[in-house]
Length: 317
Image 1: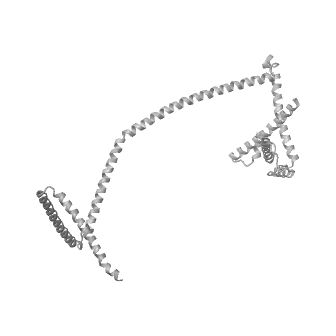
Image 2 (image 1 turned 90 degrees about the vertical axis):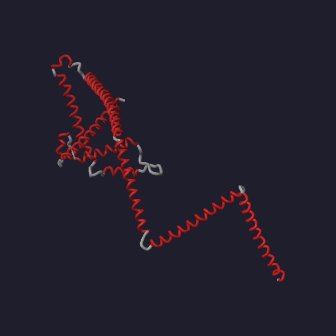
């Protein structure tokens, strides 16, 4: 179990160094792009990079492929459900020819040398810190007790205090934000009320303008109707149509007078009949019915006579 744990820690350390190398390379590329620097490799010593850009690009590509494979854990399975070695070889060839021709031995040696140097530098730095603590006379009797577990414990406590302080700051910022939000809501409510009051104050002016506009529009429509009326008169009463219109008016007046005289005469006669007999209306209706019946009977008699006239002709034939 301890051996597996040791192997895991070693692999984790190498992986973290590889990630750090890729991040430092990307940082160098970003700084060069922002600053307009063409010589990207001139920034490598400042970041602790020692290899060519091809090594870091290939390392980044291989890390991406490895992380994707670790997450998916899917073999190269064909449609028939079998794993073909040809597919594996094809994809391995594609991955091995990424951006440039690079031998596996040179690639491994370059990475191993840089990772080894980085890890050795960190180990030396850590060892130097322990040596300084042991040699420093200002610590007195605490040098023997200030070992790694105690120091780790102190660092953890300090980190805990910092996290608590950050959490308190976060809660304080949340409370302040809530207070500011409530104040902003109140200000917004006051502004909405002021806007409504302002609209109500100017509503009567708007209504007055609307009324004036409608009155002017009505006057305009009346003027248009008068213009149309005059146009109609102008087109109707011309020099050619005026004599004919006078003649038509004369005929209409005469016909009206005749109809009025006939109407008055009929009214007078009706009143005379009503004065003679109060049942004149009933008698007149009965007389009208009798006349209609006689007319119907006369029509029937004429039809019968016509039929009788046709009988000899039919008998002779």
